[in-house]
Length: 215
Image (cartoon, rainbow, N blue to C red; front, side, top):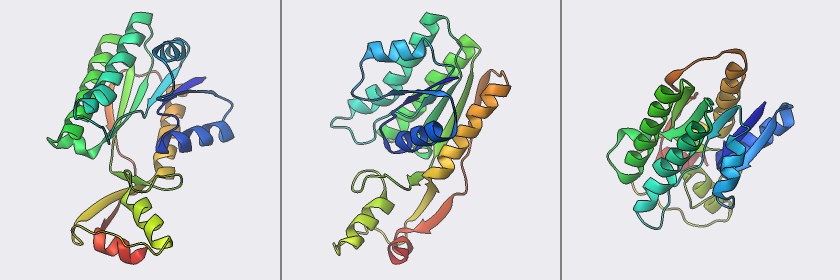
């Protein structure tokens, strides 16, 4: 099986790619910001399943939310449709897709693109609305408060807590990877169409103040 991982050099992508290469004999294809549209087309021409992790959460302009999340998803789906290929896709979305902020809206738009693709192609689509993901290889001062706190506290640097009572929902990257790998196994044994939403657990709930104390 050929497995295409978009965002393969990102936090979740790096963990997933390492796991797949270490535990399966499948061919893992990577796509990231240093690849070209032609690279994406070539990979989609042979991929048996796509794990779509690529996205934008810290853009320079608000418009990049759309181009990096919904726009890239549109390109991916349009390419598969033009190739006449009904390839199952798994998407790492966000719990913020329930909100009305620019990031959440762009993630919700990406989900809608995939729902249309599932209807048009007959392929299966699985959407994971992930909470905050933490774990190895996560970048501090980027998109994980756990990594940011660990980085600062380990270096005796001050940390900033905007609201100690604010509750966070956290999931470990290893649990995300296991959920994605389990879905790949399902795709090997079952042929299904339509769109389903899945959750990843366990989800840890902790306030920012308590998180800082634990670290």
